[in-house]
Image (cartoon, rainbow, N blue to C red; front, top):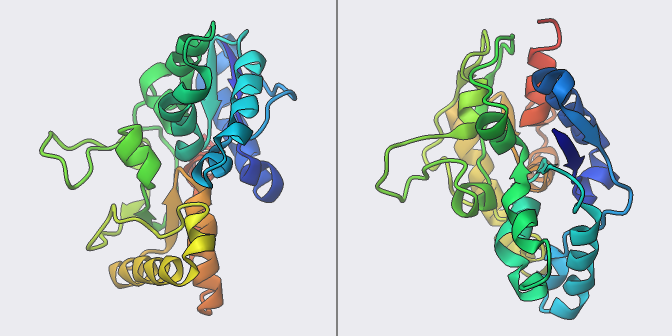
Length: 253
C-alpha cells in the first residue's frame, strides 16, 4: 500500500515531532508492505479560510490537494479536524470533479487508519502514566472515532483501544470526557474570553481526575490546552499526541 502523509500546517510548523512519531508508528505497524511518502505539493486543508467565511480561498487549496494525493492508495493525517475537512467539507469545492469521491474514501485519520485498515488491536508496550484522553470534536462527532456520550449506541473508542493494552497505563475519568476544549480554530481568536474559559474548565476537569498525561489525536486542541496549563503555572502535566504515546511506549518492543 502506498500511503501519502497529509501533515497539518500547525503540526508542520509547531509540532514536527508529532509527524515524525506518526511516521515511526506507521512503519512499525505497517511493515514492509506499507510505503510512506510526504508529497511536497500538499497545502493547507483550507479549513481556517472556510470557517472565516472565505470559501473562494479554500477552493484552490482543495483542488491542489486533490491533484497531489490522486496517485496514492490511502491518505493518512494525524488530525481529526483536517481529515474531516477533506471528507465532510470539500463538497462545495470539489463536487463532480474526477477523483473527489476516491479522495474522500481513502483519507483516514491516523488512529482510524491503524484500527480500521492496519487492524492494529491493543499493541504491547509500556507507558506508566495516568492518561486523560481528549477526543476532539471533529474526530469524535464528524469522523466517529468514538461513540460519544450523547449517542445511544454501543460504546466504542478507537483511540482508547490503541492504548488500553499498554503496561502501566491507566485512564483518568473526567466528569465531562468529550466536552469541547474551546479551541475551535478561529473561534479562539474571535471569542478569546469564551475559548479561554472553556479551556480552563477542561483543565480543571482533568486536574480533579488526576490526569498526568493529556493525550489527544488532535494537536490543535492540545495546543490550546497546553497554553492554558502552562499559563496557569503547570509545568508537570505532559501533553502528547497519541502517536507520541504509541511511539514512546512501543519503542523497546
